[in-house]
Image 1 (tube, rainbow, N blue to C red):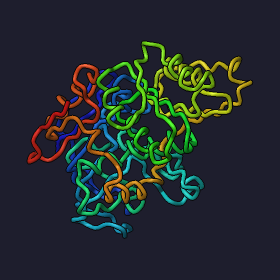
Image 2 (cartoon, helix red, strand yellow; image 1 turned 180 degrees about the vertical axis):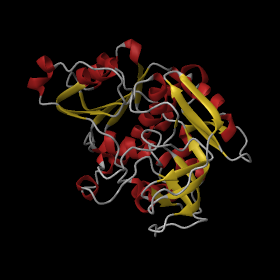
Image 3 (cartoon, rainbow, N blue to C red; image 1 turned 90 degrees about the vertical axis):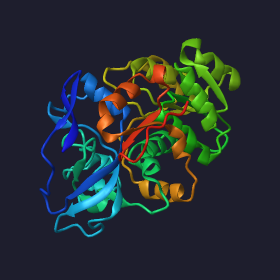
Length: 354
């Protein structure tokens, strides 16, 4: 089969690799029908995630058809259309029993495209299939559903829920790529008083306004002043960091009010300064976290009921064999206007929406 392979920092290839097979009785082999690229994949290629070794197939989000299952799998069978979660769960360890699947110590957690071969391929082996794949209703399109593998659960759990967004809150989202936009969409479920979007790309700020942001500001233009003006000098109740660079994190801590929350969602490859000399007296709560995907069934029900604006995040579609072109477009988002790129079956034609 063909797959997108990490060959070391700055090097990748779309090449032939062996087909995956069942290695454990809890495994399933999925034929990939729709797959996407995550900002985390770009961090890996840059060398920011040293656990990913040369020769690893990248990707941790997909929708596809079950081709084969191990003898212990009970919830799916060959022929089923499923969502492949970015997080695998053994279901037995302490953390899985606490619904903290991202911290699984039984061989799960974030393993796809990280510690084992991932989804950016024609086929993928998924461990712990009973808990790590989700049956899809026929009403949910594959190109929509793939955004539930990572983007929406991450934004909802690590951004909105960890940030304790409440009715009437002023919420600032720093970085309005796919995660930031999904944060805006799911924050709206809690009727915040206002949502302010911050980014360096005007195209993404426009997307944030379309997603429901009440105010937008370019990060180069001093968003701290806007937040101060809109909150009468108090600061935001919740600030979500969805970039993964030190400057963005430090900006978030400057915009939060006393007693407020900073929810860090971005994947950081470098240390960020924590200015406790300023923060200690403000009673600020700072949370970090890898998504657990416990919310995926809820979000899937909401998508089936047409309550999530998933399709608004997909700006580019490609065929699977166009993986290298898709990466190029996604990595140059400021120039291409890319938000989320999705790759799928050949019958899907390439669509670009401004």
